Length: 194
Ligand code: AMP
Image (cartoon, rainbow, N blue to C red; front, top):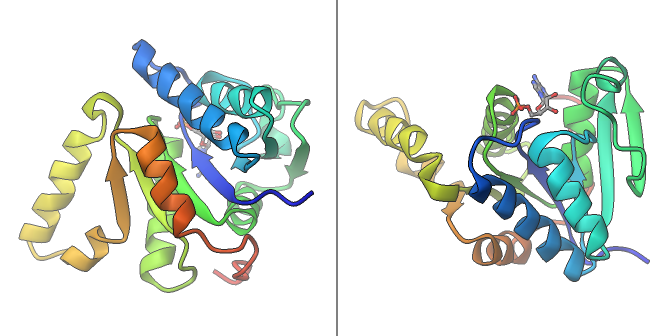
């Protein structure tokens, strides 16, 4: 059976030092799973990545993991994903993740998460896709980044419309509802030529 929606979650390969980060990854996975949705993510079993995938599966959802060969051992590829795709390069990974999802959500994470978030955001501003992009701002983790971005608008390097392409929320359920409501069919855009 086809899942009613597919959401790509970017998040830390570490768990962070505070329980709310793990809890919100669990909440996101459970929300997706309870609705029979599909999680697309980086295919690892470490940190928040493992947490969100486990929670999705436990609640009855499907999980598509996409991981490059080079990271299969380093990030403990999650063998019990509904689908685990082992791809050649990091770029293949990001392309497949973006194509298989109808919306994107970044949870707390490190530079890998930032890079993925900024990439789908810039792809959206350039019109390569029109899928919603969200940031779950657990315990204000992203406040300094959001302040920096507001400063970038004030400094004339960004416009408000670019900020409006990203939806920021603090409650997993409310944010997921909004992203899924605006989500596009997975695979709607060919992202192979970016
Ligand atoms: P991090 O947020 O740094 O813990 O990384 C989260 C995930 O992002 C991990 O699965 C990393 O392998 C992945 N990642 C790191 N750098 C990149 C990149 N350039 N492109 C795609 N994924 C990346």
